[in-house]
Image (cartoon, rainbow, N blue to C red; front, side, top):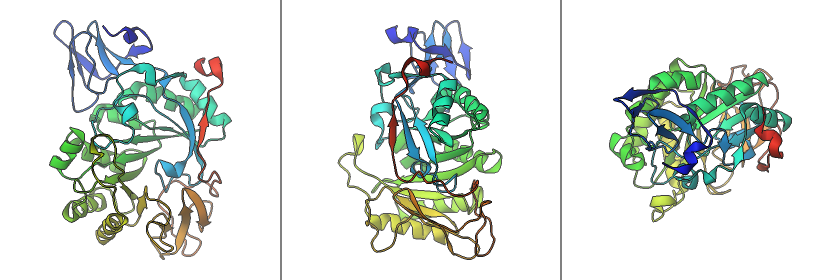
Length: 374
């Protein structure tokens, strides 16, 4: 048995026993069947002596204060700082993963910081953050931990953000998102075959998660699709994706198209050209989507004054929020989020004037043993 399993473990929920000592995970659609001493594909859920546990509990790869726009979230507390952190492992195997050193980690050595839920909430509050983000690797695999941290954040008056691929079963999804205020769901592709080739996972469960978030959950939703040349950037696929968002989720749900940079198992592919992102936005707008953003490009890549990040009013077309490199450059909303020109409310979560955090990224070194207590 892995010697690390005796450390930082807690009982898991969302599983059932099969036979005398086998455990079946009920967290995500993979439903891993684990014999004693085995881990799931996600790496962090394991069978110890016939009991499903969550390994790496209370441990993180580190903390950083980011602009909320980096998640990316364009309509959720714009301009404010968010405390970001993550763990190791993932329930997808994305070929082009740009955080693969964490998501495909097979050692808890990646998780060098120990922190209790209360300590994380206290750290975020003390740094002046408005929210805490579960990111870097997919947080659904540590569902139990996320729920505990999110509840501690609520006690401190902090919002919570999940950056996820949405590959989770319906029952745990309800528990997970019940304590989440905003989510950016990474929709990897909009064809079953391309989604499966890129992630080794099926597309259907992700679409069901998106429908649940848009239709039932009290969660602000935005979507990101990383456009990978030749893998998920065909015109028909993009048109179908945009039509799904418009019809099933809502035309004012923000959609972010971001540029791929060669990494992991797709290091031989070229980076996504700016022209591909511009074409994708045209297709999405033609399908009726009101808020389509372009990201992950170097400054000036789109040419001229084009930035791909400005939010326009659905009512009168006036620019509501101007952005440049995660920084707010213009603001035409009142404190309740209504357009100063025509009075139409912008979809999203706006509370007062914009924040002024800007494009800073601040790594945070926890204050020693105090962070691990509580």
